[in-house]
Amino acid sequence: MSSTIIEKEVHLFLDSSSGVPFYRQVIQFVEHAILSGKMVPGDKLPTIRSLAIELKINPNTIAKAYGELELRGIVTTQVGSGTYVSARPSDSSRDELMRRIDDSVGRFVREMTALGLDRDHMIAIVRDYKEER
Image 1 (spheres, rainbow, N blue to C red):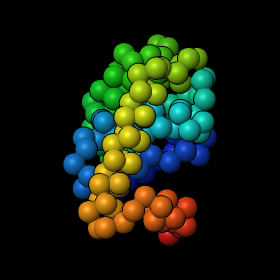
Image 2: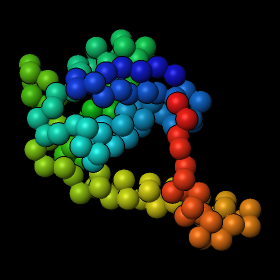
Image 3: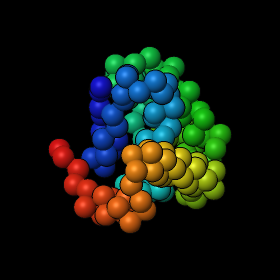
Image 4: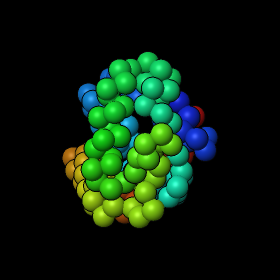
């Protein structure tokens, strides 16, 4: 697993064991950072080269991620200046986030139901959950 900082102390971690391609992880990270307010319109992303060096991956991987983010309208690239978070978040990125949330909740509910837990117990588990770090 490797990490880097995108401008405002926002850490990007790549998980080589997840099965998710690195370019897709970069896209998901940027989308999540924007939707969570950690990155705002006008924030500058690292250069393709600097991010590739930090993450120890091929620059083409970062270029592919940035290209897809630009096609979706999530970032804009200004030649000679850099890549920036777009002024207006994309509806498709919100839709994607909601789809991922729905998928995660669905998996959780199915797994807990298979273990014999009812909805009230599931809610209590989520409410009382403390992430260990």
